[in-house]
Amino acid sequence: MATINVVSPHRDDAALSICLTLSRLVAAGNKFRVLSCFTRTAWAPQLADGMAIDDVSAFRSREDDAFISLYGSSGEVKGLGFTDGPLRTDWTIKGREAVQKTYGPESELVRKVADALCTHQSGDTVWAVPLAVGHRDHLVSFWAGVVAASHNPILIYEDMPYALQLSANDLAEQVGGLEGRLDRSFTPTCVEGEFSIRRWIEYLSCYASQFSADELSGIAKEISTRGGERTWMDQEAMRILSIAR
Image (cartoon, rainbow, N blue to C red; front, side, top):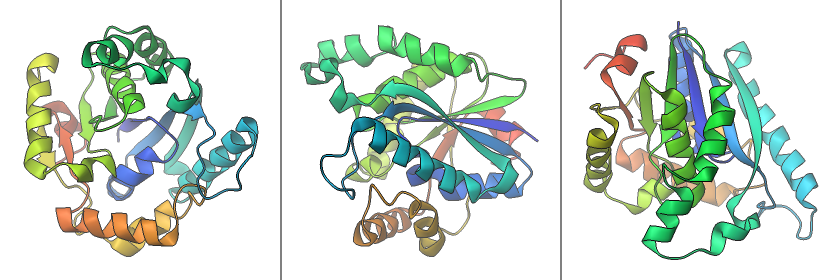
């Protein structure tokens, strides 16, 4: 039995990307904790306009609790309390070099998030981190997760729905570019077996502040067309989680 630390940039990202994967890993006897990084937020397109930030943040915390409850005692969630991107003054920076300096592996924000993540390090922990496609908070979460993981095994998940904007080959090339930087190789895996649109929508329906029924249906169909929830595991993660090549 292993514990999987899932680094989720925002409260719904783990569910969007690997909810069925987590279900299959739990069925195999593993446990997991979702570590939601940027949880102070005003982003809730399905709620009434003008809600206070604290009220939106509390509402989304309850959504996380509802999601985790679907896994029984095998899952838990921790909110780290960092401020969501659009509420930060640094969100307006432009230019690749400036973005990397503010959100890349050497940034102060990455260090702060990594320090918070490290408090949840333990024994045979597999760290699940987002591939970081299309969102600066995801980039921070990726590098912070890598720092926190240190020499522990890593699983990279393709963060939805952003990953749907790129082809499967583009995503594979992005992972390939990370292999040299992280000094480890990654193998593509689809743990959940046949992707169930119905079950995926059931899990994501916990996040009513974020998506309409039509939006969930559309995202689920696109993920299904891609072949389901693809993750990338290093050799040690595959061994611990008993994933056959």
